[in-house]
Structures are given as structure tokens and as C-alpha cells.
Length: 300
Image: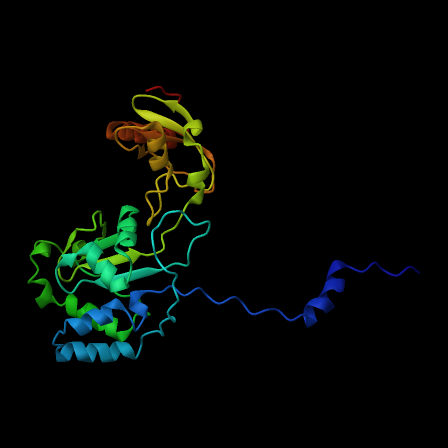
């Protein structure tokens, strides 16, 4: 009687049972100023001492009992300029700062993080620096020292003395905006979020952008978007995008504007607007298509 054929599971099961599996890779630590004892926030507090009240001391002691252990700090490369674009992204690094005195944004970031002024200026040009009038709630892994500083700068008695937030709720004052100029004035208590290692798109520098343009009219441009590029940029990088590079290739007076998005990994046609008016027209056409479920052939 012939022996039954061995199944794939019967052949692999003994090997899998005795095969040692490697441990999972460690998580990449995100070096946040909130999570390092050598943070600029701590250094800033040593330079500008506040007189903590009993309420703040009790709160900091209570938070220290429940705070999650912070990740270890990471060794960072030497910084010079953002360009040329590296082939691979650097490990994520996002720093959260609070200005303790009135100062220019570029000077404060450069001094607090030990970054060259030109590198800070590049970050601001890339759209990688955000500010808010009032600091948001720290993450759960923030050190007790940072929680205490947050509570100091957001005390109602402190906020009432700040003219810039009069007439605003705390939630409105915590809304973030991009810093657009290294010389932008920061009021004491202003919160900053600095994306020190922005997401990069090296593919942008390898494309002949003029050859990717399909049509040009008075109101819009149709672009055959290459893969591995962003239409309008990322949260921390608005420079390396299809909009910016197409505008440069065509030499238009004002930068083109996005009307819709497709995934970074996708390739296909996108419509870039020359005017805000056409953005509204295009969005209206998109709504008609989505609501009626039909394709509208249009000319503008």
C-alpha cells in the first residue's frame, strides 16, 4: 500500500517548533524635548526661575507617580544645511519648546537646540517650525519637570497678563501656525514645535518637471505627477513638492495651488490652479461628480 504524501504543514511544523525566533526590533525613540532631562526647557527654567506655588509643587509630585518613563536620548548628526537632499530620511526628531522671554524665533531655536542659524532658517523655509500662543497639554511620557513648566506658563494668573491672548479661549490660543520668518517675534510663554528632521522627497530633484506638464491654461495646469513625490508637501516640508517644482519649471509669477491630492506613492494626473477662483470652481465640479455619481466632461 503506498504511503500517503506528506503535507507541507507536516514537513514545516517540526522545523518551526524548534526554530528560535529573533526578538522584535526595538522601537525607534523619538527624541522630544519633553522626554529628555537635558532639554532646553529645563535649561531655560534654570536661567529664568519662577517661584512655584504650593499648588504647582503638589501637582508635580502627583504627576511624577504616574508619568511613563521617557525614552533615552538619541545621538544626532552634525547639522549644517538642509540641502542637498539626503537619499534617506534621518530618524524622527521633534522638539517642543516654550520661550521664557521675548525673543526672535530663529535665535531662540538656535540657542535652545544648539543648531546652526542657517539650518534653523532652512527649517523655517521648509515649513517645519510651528508656534502657538499657549502650549498644548504635554504627552503622557513627559518628565515631571516639563509638566511643572507647562503648568507654570498656563496658569490663569499668567495668561491674564498676556495681551496677545485677550479675547481668545485657551483652545483658540493653542492652535498652531507656521513660523514664516526667523526674525518673527516670540512673546514670553509662546510654544514652539520644531521638526528638526523633516520628511524628504529626493525624487523631486531627479524629475524633468517641464516634460511632466500635460496642459497649461490661463487658470490651471495639468501635471502628470511622478511617483514618490507629494502634490502639496508634507506637514514639515512644503518645499519639496509638485506645486513648488512645477511653478519653478514654468516660471509662473505666483506659485501654483493644489486643488486635490493623490497618494505620494501614486502616479497620475493632478490639476494645479493658478488662481483661488479656479480652486472654488474645481471643488464645485468635484462635488457634482461625487453627489451625482457621474463623470462630468467640462471645459473652463
